[in-house]
Length: 109
Image: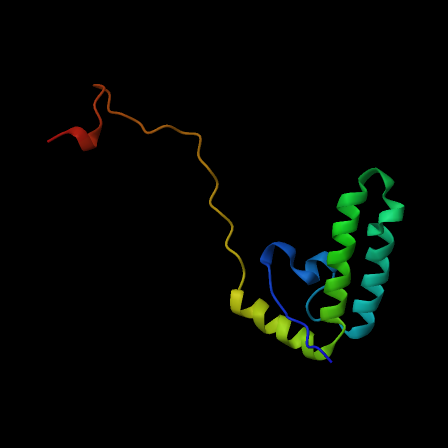
């Protein structure tokens, strides 16, 4: 039997996609898969078939990985190695200030 190549992409975390916490048991994974499959199935999303097809394929991959104890363990290890992804700092709309005489402090001798 060919072994599945496991990867981790923080932008498509399998637990987040399935809407379950990482501590979920096998039954919770199966229930979440069935629920999400009904929501994402392309036949039930005729207005956005391409998006639904891509999401459904990703959901199937997530279920295949998380429903098998060995591949789930490997996925969890990769997920742990990547750690939480930092959120970028908010962008400021403020412009650098100059002094009251119109010069910048870094331009002064």
